[in-house]
Length: 508
Image (cartoon, rainbow, N blue to C red; front, side):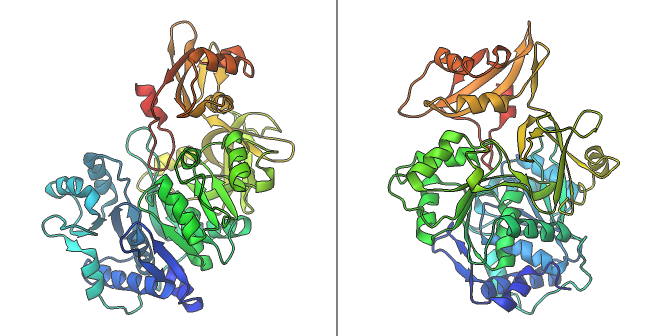
């Protein structure tokens, strides 16, 4: 059965085409599909013959971005095993709990996380084979490169694999307690790829990935569809604004995706003024609405066309797309649902709402995950009786069926009995010329229950006072929406995926 053996099938069609440029290494490997497939076969043979990995077994990964993430993903696909990438931002004790839950017998890690792995190895874990990517590794650890060199190249294929088998476990953000592990099936991968190709990708695209590969953004938004389509993907260990701009220019990237905070940081680097970005067909922004002034700056200074996107770990991840020609006309919209996605807005009683009514966004389609690993109860909480997935996002759509995320249910706060949506306030703040980054959270207030507090990072060459920003907001927002507090900060807490960590702001 070829389902899951993505590289084996792609190698038949274009063995000598450039698949991966791993720009996080020195020297930089430039691997064809045939070479990438050989690496995956070698690893699959070792996993099967030495580690005893078979269908349904988990192989864990704790590493910054690099080709090894894909080696593990594709080797697991050949065996019917499950790629399980771990969030390297977590404390080792949190990782220990996740390992106890998903019970991988193999852990691949890089030297950046050796200290945490050393602690894990001293504790009781299900891991029996430790494999390091660089450095010396912990005692008893095997070197990944040596392992590949010694393993046979004979093809591995799981003959019993079907579309509902699980390809990967990807963990959610984990806003409370341990993150939940969304089970990504081969069926979900196929339908996400089809949606992505319909809206985004061509056969000759070159994509630069800056999302961490323990997220669906790194593995599944464009990276895996690129392999299926036969395009080239450029990898970087982690987001570095100057390096990103240089790589887009050098590799003539045609597709780039990031979150708004990353796009803002790119404009502040010394390379911004001189770098040639004309190869880009479009840039995709997700995670939060892209500020209109930023879209206008990219268009004016670099001729960049933007697509706004929206996705999530448990669904897609590609769900909505806003065409570049609508970036200004429908500013703030995530676009329309992708071709094989159904979406609606519902009220608290799960009744569908009409245009411009705010309610919860719910989804249905074949690119949905197959539940949470070992947590059926949590999955039941987000799937209703008719099979709609409840996202927890407050949204609306207009008369033309363009959708707008109003805010997360958990981010909304109530001030004096009125619903307040931080995203709306942040969008207004971004229209002030001095604001570089901002985030608004609800804080306790003895009179109103909660009021807004804005954390603001100013542009390096700009100044503004709290009173000036509040006056600016007073020109465009109702009084109850205006924050009562403004705090200027040097930076905002940003996750590995480039999103603002609101929880940390609330805890300050």
